[in-house]
Amino acid sequence: MSLNVVIMAAGKGTRMRSAVPKVLHRLAGRPLLQHVLDTVAQLAPQRTVVVTGHGAERVEAQVGAAGRCVRQQPQLGTGHAVQQAVPALDDAAGTTLILNGDVPLIAASTARALAAACGGERLALLTVTLEDAAGYGRIVRQAGAVQAIVEHKDASPSQHQIREVYTGMMAAPTGALKRWLAALRNDNAQGEFYLTDIVAMAVADGVPVVATAAANETEVLGVNSPAQLAELERRVQRHQAEALMEAGVRLADPARFDLRGTLTHGQDVEIDVGCVFEGQVHLADDARVGAHCVIRNARIGAGAVIHPFTHIDGDTQGVTVGAGALIGPYARLRPGAVLGDEVHIGNFVEVKNSTLAKGAKANHLAYLGDATVGERVNYGAGSITANYDGANKHRTVIGNDVHVGSNCVLIAPVTLGDGATIGGGSTISKDAPAGQLTVSRARQVSLSGWQRPRKPAK
Image (tube, rainbow, N blue to C red; front, side):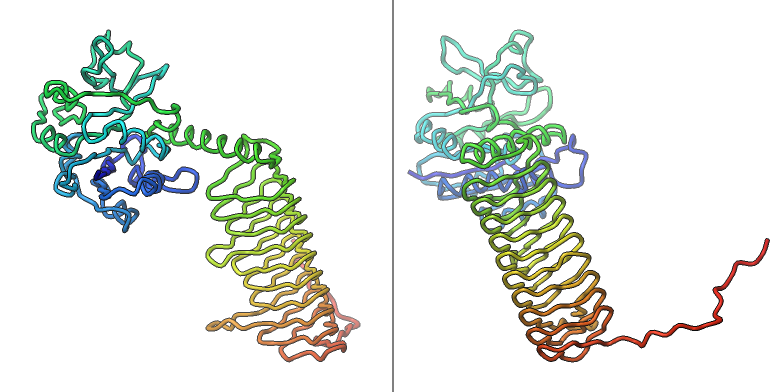
């Protein structure tokens, strides 16, 4: 049986008070609409149609190849929105599932059950019972059977007391849906075409109207304001935190934890407060992450310690931290940083597109960019690789057991041989031989009789 999915994503979201289309605001690191698209992909529908309107070009760019976009301009209500999708629907007998781009957490299992409840023959409504039903359409029943949905603004005082509400999501027989949509009228308080009016049409046609309950309130909550977005974010993060703790991860405080991607882990992982994980992150056995770290697209080895306030951003290249490594506090690892086992990267050290072999150390106030660093290297405080000549990047190669003194500048391309020692304060622009001391700095002199300039007397 054919399955169409229509996602309504045309609204402006006036209460968001933002130039960003509502469905593109982010929840747990992804746009609201992307959450829905990812869920729909699990259903493998024949057609996915996204109804756009406000900020259509930006929304359609987010949809990409995940569906066909149609525009609703002007926006004249939910029924009018689905009317725009009719020409794009599969004509075969089957089911059309209607979802909302600003209701991001609908589970694939719930969407699948809703479509199954329709079965191409019934009008199936997704409902939920809420303590505070303000703003939602009420489910009106007679002798237990669904008779209509009444929008909140059109409901009578007695209907306002109904706690079972329509979530904005339904599944309908495709052929009947097209017929009902064509018959919609806008003779209501708002002068809009309500999709919910098709319930009365189904009843009149003798089509069974059934209600399917959502698994929980969270999966049907929509976003209409920054406050609602923040509330939903905390619900998502709490759910993710609980899942990690159930799997054995020790979170110092699940209320101060943010996962905006995917976090995989080994045993006995510890995460302190205020940490943010983005993209794809893996924490191996016994890894520890200190307070207020941000880690994006990285693999952290077994027993590694990421001290507080460290920022790791692998971007598209990724970052790798070896087993037993010590990173931070206040360190920065940028894309392409590959750190071997037992590497030490200390406070205010930045590493970019560089490989550090086992036991290498850069403990203070240093920069390593486009470098290959050997085993057991000690890289002094204040030293940098000058890897950019204004037009091109060049590589620095540092052999095993090299000692680089403090405040050195290594002007790439340059190679320091195994066991070389670079005297503090040196500027190295030529290769340094293995096993030798290389110094490049002006001879120290002291000038007798020199007087420091003085401020003029007042």
